[in-house]
Image (cartoon, rainbow, N blue to C red; front, top):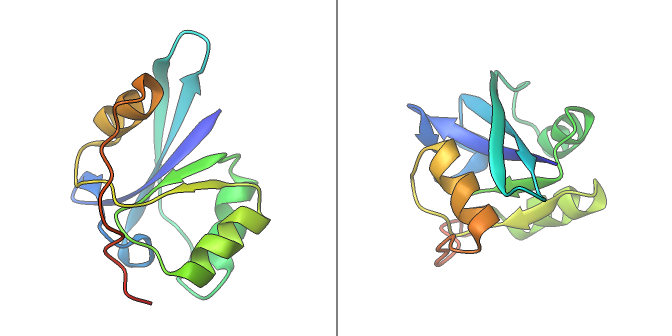
Length: 112
């Protein structure tokens, strides 16, 4: 499994469409461990581009601070589970918390 995290300054970007990088984190679901972390520069943000691009990169889940409803639908259409309302932590911390079932999510910080 691969989990995508939008980044700003090495931490979760609160709005995925405004990030300058994505962390793609390989995980072992059985062992609940974080594997390789790859940082990629995404293509220019246009509606529908990032869900397709992340699907092509092998992402199965995206953890975000905020994301509009249309973007969430596009990720779902690309077979990527959406988790919103996460806080600005490092990718490794967010993914380990997700694997452990302790990821704290709050309000979706996106209003569109």
